[in-house]
Length: 416
Ligand code: NAD
Image 1 (spheres, rainbow, N blue to C red):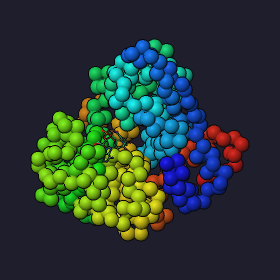
Image 2 (image 1 turned 120 degrees about the horizontal axis):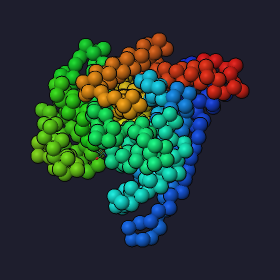
Image 3 (image 1 turned 90 degrees about the horizontal axis):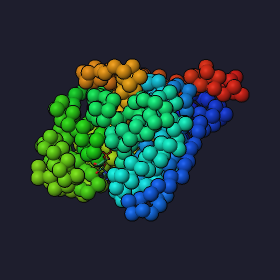
Image 4 (image 1 turned 180 degrees about the vertical axis):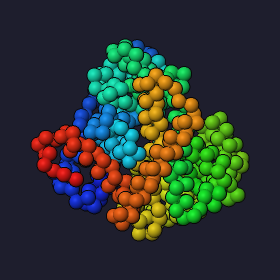
């Protein structure tokens, strides 16, 4: 994953003509923290886990990124995702750098008390490198508002009342209105902007979704409300399709109850992997990384792909899409609605002043539209695809901030 994310970086660095030395500096993480977490399980036995926090770049502000609880969490994955966060926060122009981390545990095998204990042990180990002005974690795979509440509580024991140390908190515990829907809403907004350039609206298109969790289900509901026809949805257990358009509200209720879209009576069942090559105008991968590869890229039938998931497209697949004229709206733009509303949450925490939902939605729309058009203009200027353009914009912003701050004194003669 790390190598893959570097491919996109280098494509953009080539466009900018920046030196090998500056590339090396911009890619290197600022700090990599690995900690051993030894806690007592419910059965009285000791449990051992590793916690990671990779802080990639802080030139544009405190570092920001999710915490993932999954057996595959390791330094390599956290570093790649921290890197992406640096570029993502720069693309939407929120005043942050990038970070990512997590704990290599299997939360399905842990009780709530065990998870709470492990989380608090992790906070104890990293409390000196996180904080509202240093590094602000957020939910990611298998972490949620409840876990963020535990982190806020534990961190506040060290630093005093600090709601701004994490975002994605419960609304009743200094969270923000509109955070839950934010990534899905952002996905919809960038798609609307791309369609407008083709003189189309959501009412003109059919959409297929891989993944119907937080991001997929909110994006599908919001798009359907604007007239889009959601014709297929696949998740980890199965898929459901309806050429006349699925009843998305009913599907959300079904998925909430059954924890899968499989078995939904309002459509025909299919093998969930087929969703990626479904006949639809727009494909929205909203589940896992590396799902669009050289093996299936030629079979994709959508004309537009909106990367709601992080890193769903391998560089080989990306090249095939480019050659086939398929428009890809890249992850660092498409799914940046989440970090944007996280920024609003942090701003509210710092100011101790709450924003209404309308204000969140209005500001999010402005940020996402502006980001889309900045990327589209960059694509036109350099005659490149949207992904390369997004990286060009981000590298310029991060690089200029780093050089202006003289973050790297030994290379401050370098320029962008
Ligand atoms: P989630 O856990 O709520 O939902 C994940 C969905 O993916 C579920 O519907 C699940 O069934 C499906 N899925 C899992 N394995 C699958 C498989 N093998 N095949 C098909 N579907 C599968 O997660 P989420 O928060 O919706 O995040 C989805 C993606 O969006 C992730 O890549 C995440 O990193 C990215 N993302 C999320 C946010 C956010 O704010 N939640 C922000 C930016 C990016």
